[in-house]
Amino acid sequence: MKILTAAQTREADAYTIQQEPVSSLDLMERAAAALVAWLRQRYSAQVPFVFFCGPGNNGGDGLAAARLLFQAGYEVQVFLVEEAGQCKSQDFTQNLQRLPSEISTHTLQAGFGFPEMEFGAIVVDALFGSGLSRPLQGVYAQVAEEINQAGVTVVAVDVPSGLFTDAPTPEDAVVVQATYTVTFERPKLAFLLPKSGAWVGEWHAVPIGLHPEFLQQVATPYQLLTNAYVKSLLKARQKYAHKGTYGHALLIGGSYGKMGALVLAAKAALRAGIGLLTVQIPQVGYSIVQTAVPEAMALTDAHELHFTRFMGQPETYECIGIGPGLGQAEDTRLALENLFRQHLPPLVLDADALNLLAADRTLLRTLPQDTILTPHLKEFERLAGPATDDFHRLQLLQSFCQEHRCYVVLKGAHSCVGTPTGDFYFNTTGNPGMATGGSGDVLTGILTALRAQGHSALETCLLGVYLHGLAGDLAAKEMGQASLIASDLTTYLGKAFLALEAS
Image (cartoon, rainbow, N blue to C red; front, side, top):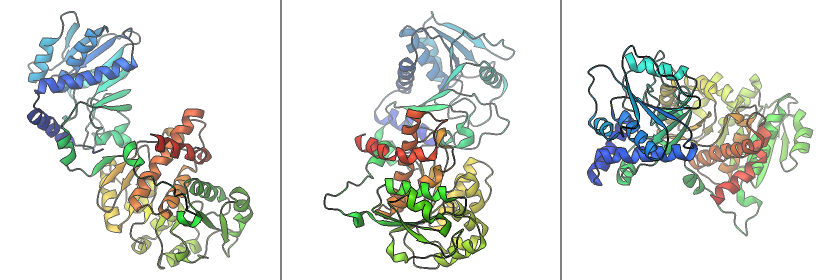
């Protein structure tokens, strides 16, 4: 699913109005109807609603929704927020004229007294939408601050008022803190980034019938993963296949005190469908691996405590994953340097492998094309430099992937896959329960297995992050987020495959 800028969204509206054809007022009615359908699905008619509407089209959306909700039997109050003498959009004015006289309607201007909220009331924020280009000021900032202090559930229409969608929102800007954001057709880029996404709450995209021809032809580097697309990447198992059909992968990792990370990655690789798995570990981990992961073959390093020398033959493997529990000893760094000079199969690098790359950036120039790196935010900054904000980090990610011809899975709430072509793919699965030690090691195992089975680097990243997050969602559904541990992700990985296949 393409993610559009605010300007592209306006172009989509205009294209739909022209090509369908449909009036802008009727398109607004569609948006309001979609919002009301979402509200009615979640809240009964016993719940009172308070709408705060600005003078533009976002306010018009709010007025139309207030009317439709009232006509459906809900208790509705409307507050028109405006600066004295401010112009109003034409569609706002027409929807104000359509508002039934029975709806309690008030105007809030500078020096207003903020209304007292009825217990259990739902506030609908329809002050400003995605077209906002400067921070809220005056009465709008005051109303936003009062909403945030009211301690009520807030549903934002399209975008939380005050939030910039395509650029960093200023540090001192006032933004409505939404509990839910019901956005139209497509989420905004800001929803998927850590700092701006915190204002959005739980977002839901509702269709309003924007013209499919425009959505198909519009160009954007930002994509959102959908279940249907990821499902198309799955490969059916063949009746006459054998273990060699599904690839032979090598995982290099583990060190004294960190063998668990390698075990987590190995178990995940096996659950992700790999035909054969070998692990290279220090001598201290031999009995651990043979006991914990009997399905894996083991090579032991000459060193007792950590990785110092590649023991196998690169051509034996379809993919090599390096990093879980690896450690950062100097002879480990030298071993990586020597390994990267060889003719290697595809690589997946995580954890200490990334830290060693960051400590000696000359190693980056030796990486094979289409290597997959899986850093969290801090690991990525060590590799690419500090980011001034989330949008700047995307620029760094794009430059890094293009310069080093690699794929980067930037891990987070909406893990972002950066590509050598400059495109970005945001994941839609996963939950905060996965913020626990070892989750990244499980992802490394999944990616290594998928790559070894013949998936392209891009397919590996997209399928891997989606399944990883889906396993976390299934686990959290049964045991809760707080109790989730990394091992649960592997336990539920098979159910994730099944759920994706059945969707």
